[in-house]
Figure 1 (tube, helix red, strand yellow):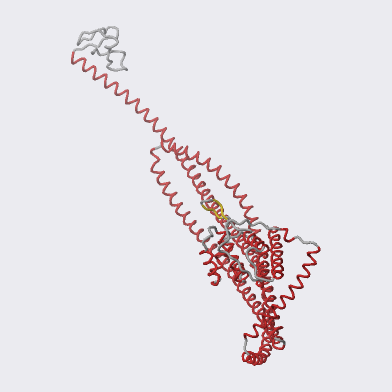
Figure 2 (tube, helix red, strand yellow):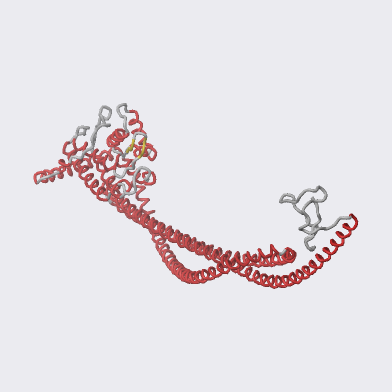
Length: 570
């Protein structure tokens, strides 16, 4: 892109120079068929197309010059007439044709350089149509606009209405700019002729201006110049005193600024050292916390397994339910007490956060004070520049009052050129300073974000540490309770075994007594009913239904523990 800009700038210089020389040698108004003029429009079209953004539409991609040229109507109301006449032309159908017609009409008005200068100053509007490295957004565009000022000596009479501007092919003819020795000799003669013609034209213009002014106006100007001369001398003395005072104030402010910068750098170095120390401590604490976390996790797994075993045993022991409920209530009380301690720790964390916020606000206030002092310094520098500029203007006015009107006008033109150059250099310096400020602001933002992330990580790690400590305390409490419950479980097991032995003895005694009672009852029934107990071998038929015993019809024993005797029953 830089090579393209340089090539286009050189082509613009050649085309403008060749057009001015040929037009002055031609000696009359130019029309649309003049070849150097056609090549000039082709070169300008290439310069305006450089770096133009591609816009998507329904028919495809499109690069249009008419968009940025339409903005001139908003910036300069005098250009509204040109844009309206271009829109009203019947033969133009494409935006490129409208842009070509606009360039021709602006050249005929001798306002092409003024319109493009207004367009270049508004880079915020041009950035919507051009890329960042385009010719119109760089210094080459300003140079080309300065070269276009020389075209105001040319008179052109172009017929835009009948030309086919939509389908013209914009190709640069380099053969026009190739020269030999004869052409150089002729060009030197032409340059001398051009210089004489330009001098004659300037002389005629000055005569016209003198004829337009009246004699009374001249006398009044002379009187006003004498009065203004005396006033300017007084203002010069006052301005010199003001300049001396402002210079002293500027030196004081610069010394204060240097002191503030040194303090800010010291604070930044201290803050960076603190951050590095905190980072090292954070890494060490994190390693220790990771090891503690792994050990606590392993202990948690073991305790969880033990807790499952205890819960299984607690399910089997119904009698221990009430005691477990009491233990749970005690645990809840401990948990409430631990929650109170957690709340106190959180209050302490909030106080630490408030202290950090106050430190951050102090840093912001110091940054704002730095910015305010920098603004004051910039304003004082602008005032000094303005005063120096006014001093130069006053000195030039004194010299202009002593010299002739012709030399005064030449000096004013040179002063304008110098002022424009100085303004351009000042704008470049301001842009460079703004870029440096933006870089510093981005660096500060990155450091602040990094510091905030570190603080957030520290808070998170502290929270995890507090959680792990609470879990470790809970695990220790659970261990103590588990050991206590194991001891109680052993005591209960011994009690249960003693009770089971006693119950077994009582059961054996009860079974013996029940057997004796049943034997007594059966003996009583047999005596009362006349029934006889038979042996197992002798009982083959039922005495009630007189049916034989079989696999489906079996004998029902009256008692299992009684000498293998059966009561005969169906």
